[in-house]
Image (cartoon, rainbow, N blue to C red):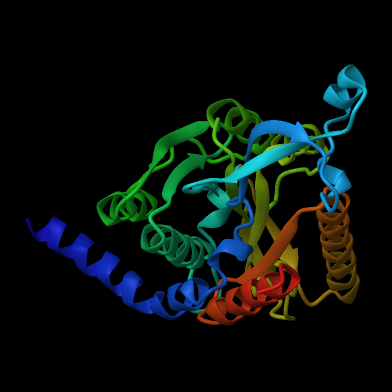
Length: 296
């Protein structure tokens, strides 16, 4: 009973803390921010003056020897799927919170926004295997379940395999929707192009990259021992060595640039979220800019 009350208190705190972002998403911007909502193919009809030529169905036009256009109807609801990378590296933080804690709060705000709009929301937890899949459903109770799983689920593995998870998503997500990939993206991006290309044909995709300050900037604090959160490998480094710090900064810059180029080439929106109390500001800025681009 005490554990249940503690869980409810934790979820309630998250709900209160994320209320501002949820309200921001719901103030007229939701439909355009999540552009997965919108249209579903219905039928074809003869072309009429003023129709958008981009809707012409060229196969039917060729058969009928007369222009025909595709008609679409508005989808009644939206499916929001959240892929949360729970590999070992997400349990890291040197500021005022872990990367996992920032991710949980942001995901909660997305889930509550979907609930407010009567949309379905689902969750997939993964490491280098599919850890847990919660099918998209509606309702606040379902959103609470998603938050509970993120808070208390203990992964069976520590590694990362984004490719395997994205391939799995392409098989289980039948309805058109929005996919949020929440990860620190420590895994290689080289294998992701094919599964992302397949998913992008049907779904809107947004990458949320969670990062900690010390993953990009190492201060001069002498010799320290570091442990890889996914492999458990330990090593001792000398942070007072300027060559080490310079090489580290160069490698981080190269990794960041590769990530940005990959997202741009695959036409995916992405947001960088700090593992700190400042994550909300970064999220609000991103969603406002996305809403403006969508004409809200």
